[in-house]
Image (cartoon, rainbow, N blue to C red):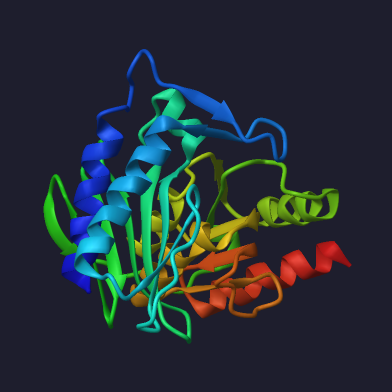
Length: 258
């Protein structure tokens, strides 16, 4: 499974980098909420990913962002986002990533967050988590417990899906030491790497969260919805370095929402 996942990531690297920072990138607007872009690179990467899975894992199901789902008979499903952070991709910022997850009937069991341009690949599942990058390979472990007032929080946008969710995020931001914005999936990789404490977002889909869930949990962290429930289908997400910081953040969000 892991070898297949890395072959998938290799294929996506080639496809995405052939378009990144090009002068003639073709972009369409899905028009779901505001400007919702998809590029020819998104589609090319998903096609490349699916070709590897068709050859290596023909009995597995495939669920992607850009193309129709493929049914399977094995009980396993690959959940893929060919470019998470399309706005960053089209802006030339190297904080987008390729998300590859494998799930069974219980949820995600393997996740990869790959950043092709800086050549960092974060992998987690089956009891281990590691990163391969310019400095070689190293094991991943999330941060140990600390006070909320010492925590670092990331989120992609200052405004979430609703006014109530935005107010809750602002309440949490007022409690932590540092809040930063705009890293898309790369922020989840930073939790697994032990660099930050929290990512809080809303309006996410299954392809946005399943790879981060597997990666962060393999590194010792926790990912749930804002009510503390498993969140493999997305929605409002708290990703935390450890259960203690997760509980503190969740309490602040709940108090602000009520």
